Image (cartoon, rainbow, N blue to C red; front, side, top):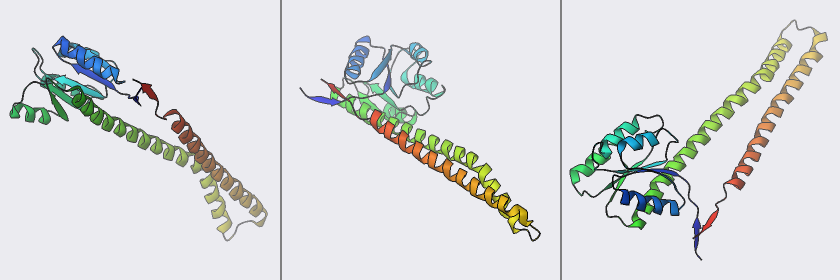
Length: 220
């Protein structure tokens, strides 16, 4: 039996047609996505107060709050401005489609849609979103590491600087020279120890991450 790589990602689907919601939800969940569904703007905003989704699938034309108004309201919520939005629409009107992109949508799928087309677009935009999120996390973690290393190295390097300045004084007392040399030696070893520990910690973390993120297979 064929198998495929499991997928991850949270998707919020909003459509006023319950049949459309059932079909889209079943299709996406069958392919490994976590799906939250809503039939109107009010329910969608309520659902959005929970965990922020990684992708929005919004019906463009809905009674009451349409897809454009809902997208504008969602973009005001914390964390939603960078969530990619794909509109589901039966309209082929060029002005409406232009309006969708101007509103911040990254793509659209016309109804009735082919399952393969919807899955391909979801996979592409969700993959880009998750990749960007990972890169941002890596950048943040590296910056935190730089700050931590800088903080831990400050004391031993300050001690080294102090001792070398004392040794360079013309009137430096000879009986204190061994102590200053001891300070330089000890502080340098401390600094090298900090660096070695951080590098080893990074190697262990990278090894553990490579093990835990190895692709799993789901049998279809």
